Image 1 (tube, rainbow, N blue to C red):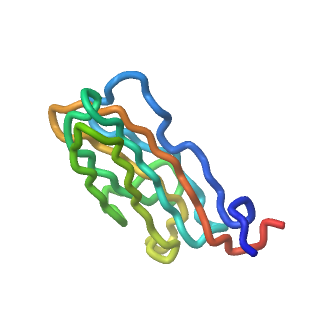
Image 2: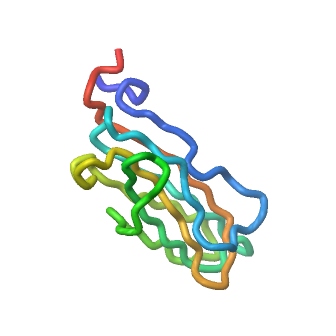
Image 3: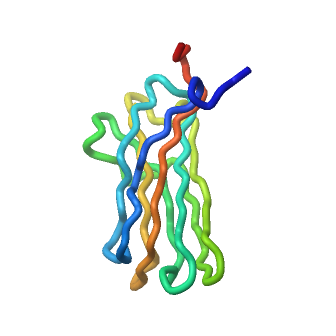
Length: 132
């Protein structure tokens, strides 16, 4: 039987905010893909007055967990809503990383001229080695 604790590693990517995020992209905390085959970022955006426009969510890659590429491995757009919390995911497999790259992070950008309240969680799964 597989258990979440043995097969997945979760961490905060972009912490929740009590104010609108309005200025450009919010970059998540990078994850090291050396020990996992899959990476997924779960993005949650709040509804109603906090939700003013679409969010573009991408996964960027890095060699050193410092400088991230502007060529994105995956992209998801979360459309605006005024009545429900919006949750979506953007994910990659480790083999999608370019040669020599081993770090990935989610980056979330609100639509131009809008502000949103959102957060993101990193989940790495399908460990390459047993975590027992």
